[in-house]
Length: 131
Length: 245
Image (cartoon, rainbow over all chains, first blue to last red; front, side, top):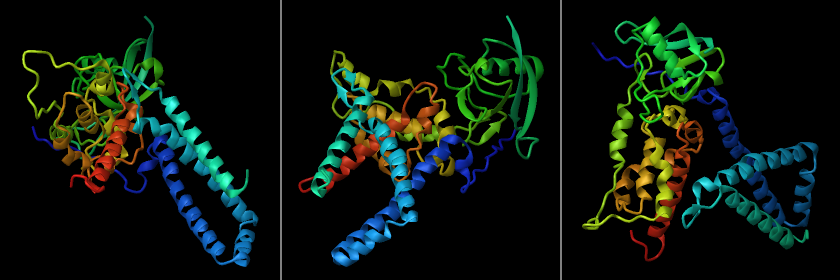
């Protein structure tokens, strides 16, 4: 009897279409493109701030057309759903906390992340003069 | 007991005759409490004795009956027909070469398993004439990883392993982590080469499918992420002033 194992081909370009789990993962990963565009936008905003009041006001005005408002809204939703919520949910996997004989429940680690997020946000708002 | 007619669509491959796998259908009268493995055994005993598949214990311990059931990596002894539709497609575990029918070649994982040194390594001699005490807390840290039965469902679910089989993969990394965090073990540095390498933990992109499909509720994705944290801390320790190089 001869051995002749059969290797099933795997598509390098469409593998993620195999099931819903992979598609959800790809959606999470693809948000990095939004992060990249948003980062470039933030850098150009900083550059215009450094360029003086006129440049800064022009930058602000450029962000107020419907397309840019739509982009900011989409970026916010994707960041929240696929970056913040998803990564906070996964945090207990990477950093389990053992208290004596018991493992700290995952939800406390997740709540801790949200609490830290709120505190940091409030501090930034305070520095920015929003509150 | 009531019976239910199940249409099984089974992937067949005979290396001596087939150029590539093909599907064959079997109509199986199943009893309502059967698992998919019972249906396969029925086929083997009553319809087609040439069907090849692995199984041994029928109680989720041996880990040998892992297959794709309707596209999901599953232990067929714990996949019950009452939870499935009338038409069920059974294929060998994805991401492994097919030896024959539902039997896959596991040589690659077996070789990686050895490289991970999944046993306690001591640098100091163990205590003489007494038990090696371990607190319950220290045991609970790694206990879930000892539940792995090497069924390889996690490898069948892992797209990283599908795309690049040099990746060490979920079960082996989880097992290495199990020994790394065992308070009796002193062999972490000996396992570093396969874990910290390009093909080790850093190849994992955290899809998390391995943990979702594990029939024993082991969480290999967590083990891999914890090893990444560990690796990053070790790296910084070496880079900081006064750190070991």
